[in-house]
Amino acid sequence: MRTLLLHAPLLFAFAGLNFGACLQSNLTTGTQSSGAVYDLFMPEAGCWNGDLVVFAHGYVQPGLPIAVPTDQLTVGGLSLPATFNQLGYAFAASSFSKNGLAIVEGMHDTQDLVHILSGTIKPHRVYLIGASEGGLVTTLSAEQLPSVYNSAGAACGPIGSFQAQIDYFGDFRVIFDYFFPNVLPGNAITIPSQLQSNWPAYEAVITEALANNPQNAAQLIKVMNAPVTSDPASVAETVIGALWYNVFATQDAVTELHGQPYDNTGRIYLGSSNDFLLNLKVERYKASTTALQNVAAHYETSGRLQMPIVTIHTTGDPVIPYWHEPLYTLKTIGAGTLLDRINIPVSNYGHCTFSGGDILAAFTLIVLRDTGTSLNAEVESVLPEAHRKAFLESLSHAQIPPGR
Image 1: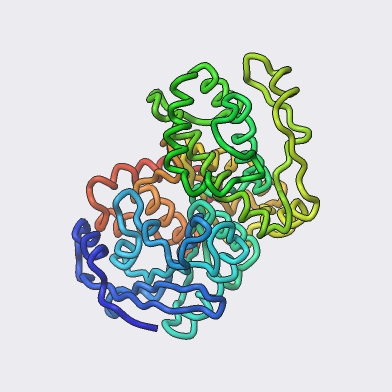
Image 2: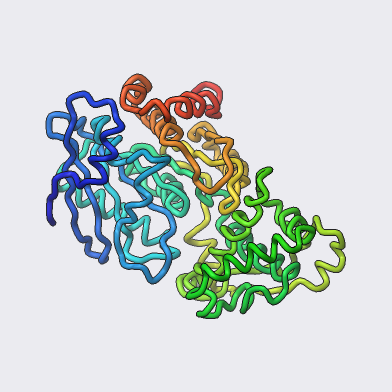
């Protein structure tokens, strides 16, 4: 392991905070037995409250080097390590041992990181937070690892149904190909290498195709029930955002799941000007039984929470849609754990487009549910003015079960 004084980007991030006594953060890096690497950010010894926040990161493109994705450690311009250190918490994140679909690895590597740090800094309480793919890592951990974490928070994750999320990306590709044939090479389950290597050029091609045929673009959005805004540019943003995952995640998912997981053999698509023709001619694919079994066994949440969890999601998320939240609510009702979950809907367009204030609002509820202690005053004292409105709004919008 090697220890460094807080590096320049975090010092810059600290500059936006209202400092008390905690002016310094120390970064320690290390390597896990799985091959994952980790970052640990510690506040000054006199400032540490003895607790640890562990972050489970979102999807990282397959083929990139194994590293903690530092770009994901900033939310709305606010550094998470800096802010949590300012509040007195240690902050750590694992890279996971692989990129791409890494939910199983993410659970194991994050648990292993807690084990490592339990032998070094020895935290009193451990809080797990995660975003996007890491939101599913977090939710599955909250259901399965009560001896590791005290409480958890999942942001914009595919927690309602991972199979439905896989099918959403596949559906987006087949519906796009129906309305815009021959724009992209390959198909929903066969991704040519030139599509990945020349993706920026294809983004421009997609944008042009949508602009040249707004009627078909509108039908695509309607059939997929995908969120857009009044800005016409959001149509291309939504479509490209969903198609990116089809292009870059498909083959990695096939490898990880030991089979092709997308299935639309029985799907009925609605919302076009001619649904009969759409359903007659759209490409159909059958999933591998092995892949479906692996998804069901290792990637689907049960709703059987073993600790309190706070989930937060933008209502206009075009990549991991908000419908995951009500689906997860139904699971917690069936499992009898509805009272252990708080949900915060954030009225923004985009995937994980939170303010730092939104995330800190969720965190205050995470701690409140675990210890009964409110951090509202402490958080407001360190949040820059630009994030305080979102903090208060998210607290006011939190869907807290009666009696909690």
